[in-house]
Structure formats: structure tokens, C-alpha cells
Amino acid sequence: MSESIPSGRLSLRDTAFFFDVDGTLADIQPRPELVFIPGATHHALSRLQALGAAVAVVSGRPLVQLDTLLQPLTLPAAGVHGAERRSADGAEQALKLDDVMRVALEAELAAAVDRYPGLMVENKRIAFALHYRQAPELEADIRALVHALIERYPTLVVQPGKCVFELKPKGASKGEVIRTFLQEPPFAGKTPVFLGDDLTDEAGFEVVNALGGISIKVGEGETCAHYRLDSVAHVGTWLDDLLAHAASISEDQIERGGPK
Image 1 (cartoon, rainbow, N blue to C red):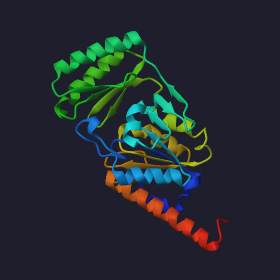
Image 2 (image 1 turned 180 degrees about the vertical axis):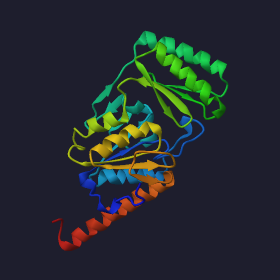
Image 3 (image 1 turned 90 degrees about the horizontal axis):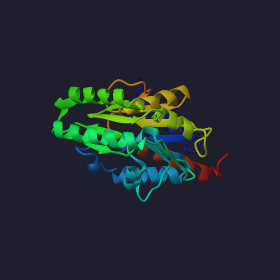
Image 4 (image 1 turned 90 degrees about the vertical axis):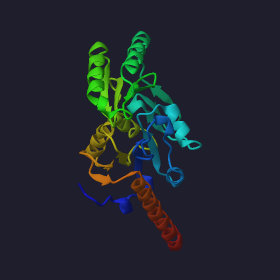
């Protein structure tokens, strides 16, 4: 894995940027509702968009939560690992769960919370995240629980993450949703860059690699990404460097009488 991300060679207008949120743009917190995007990083995303870059967020969070974290900025976005998507023109699409199955699953997960103190279930309506960050010793129990559930609910799959197992609809994939974005304006024809930190992001890295793009893993752990940044703070620094380079190019063009 190379240590030098080619930020200086990226043309913002020829690049499609895709960002995971938790663990990438924002530090992971004890509970999902405590997560926030630092002001400098938020400003950098706004500047990227203003400079003509194609920018989207691709997250396990629902779209409504992404909009709250990013406000007043509104970006094309994929939520719940691709089960929800809003394209650049504002059109939204979403996979759905069968209502009867969803109600039955909600009841089973409520019983699991009673059975395992320290387990928190996040109900995303089209997916369910089982967080055990407050009780990491529950990992084996929760893994067994979710695998038992998908045997009974075969339209769901398990997505493991950092102290979380998520039950999501089959067909929801960060890789496939990035591929879909790249077929539409303003992303079509551009070099994809994807930053993520977790197992949920590996499908996105695989697609970006196959398309000749730039895949960037944030933090430790095995990965198929070609590059690595050590932390969320380093993501902010990388964005600042990227924008500084873009500004220097713009100033040079002004001095030379415009772009050639």
C-alpha cells in the first residue's frame, strides 16, 4: 500500500469524490447521535462542491441523519449502505422491507435488548444496526443472534462493522451505489475517489479499484484500498492540502490569463 496519496495530481473538475461519514469525516462516538462533522471538514466539503467537484456521501446512516449532520449543505447521498439514494437532481430511491417481516423483526430485536444489557438497536426502518460498543464482550453472542435472524429472514444479509452488526436488505452495497452514481451527472466520466474506514467500505474500494480510481482506507486494519490515512484528523488535513493545491492552480491560471 502506497503511503503517498496523489492529491496534487487530482483535477477537481475531473474527479468524483465519495466519502463515508462515521470514522471518515467524523470521529466515532459512544452513541450514533453524538457524532458530528468538524467545522473545518464541513467547510472543506462545501469548498469542494463550490469549486466544481462532484461530491457525495456514502454511509450506513439513513439519508435524514446525513442531511442533519451536513446541514445546511445538501449533497447527493447514499444511506443505509446503498439501500437509500438521492441523486444530484434530488430524485430519491429506496429498497423496502416487507411490513409484516419488519414488525416481527422489531419485536425480536426488542427482546434481544432485554436479554443483552449493553446492546443498542438502531432502527433505520429498512435496516437494523445492533451496536455493542458499550459491551464489546457481547460480540460472539450478537454475531450468533444476527446469523440466526437471517436464517429466518432470508431477504436480509449481515453487514459487520466496528462494534456493530447490521441487518440490511440484500442488494444494498456501497460498491454498487458508487457504480450507479458514476453513471449519472455530475459523476459520469470522472475518476472516482472513495474514503472509508470500515468493513462496510470494502465493497466501495473494490469497485473504485476496478474502475482505476483512488481508494483510501482511514485508520488501521486489513483492506483492499490502495492508500491509507491514519485518522479522521488526517482526512481533514488531506482535504486542506487538496484545496490548497486547487487554489494555487487557480491563481496560476489567473496570472497566465486563464485556463489553457
